[in-house]
Amino acid sequence: MAKEQPPALVIEATACTSTGPDEQTPADDSYQTAITELTDAQRAWYEKERTDGIDSSWMLTSPEPPATDEAIHVAEQRLGVHFDQQYTQWLHHVNGWKSFSGATDLLPLDSIARDSLPAQGLQVYSESGELTPDRVGVDSFDDLIVIGGTEEGSNFIAIEAAPNPETASMPVYEFGHGDVTKYDDFKTFLQSEIDTLNQI
Image (cartoon, rainbow, N blue to C red):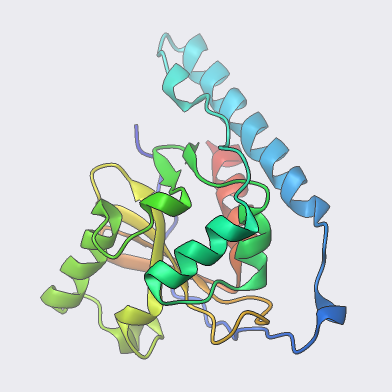
């Protein structure tokens, strides 16, 4: 069962960058809080549907173990990109999470690829002209890294590649049904997913 999609909206956002280690957060408890809130929202949705006679136990999932620095570096090298610090910190907590938000998955690093099923959805958009880079707000769709989506590839999540490893945050994009929602950064995206689950 796919989650209800947010209304079509493109939010203007400006990437925030950090130029030095003083602005980095070595241990970010907000991600542990987000993991707890997502897990609680999954459970609440499951319990609600169970009272209606629906078995949604498929959504009771747990995040995968954290990624190592080496695994993150290998993925960046393989993809030819840099991840921003917010997404890197998330990977230090969670390296993939099936059905983390309804039917939407976050891919583990070894599944993030230019030819993954969700990435093929982005390719369809780029070839059809249904959404152009200009409308989305990027120079090229090649600047986007597809980091999640639904199994059938109709909805997907992409993060904009960072210009360098010191970049604090980059926008995140959620594509679905010909629409795109743009979030300022990965934390804002996560909070939106938590809010959406809590409204179901």
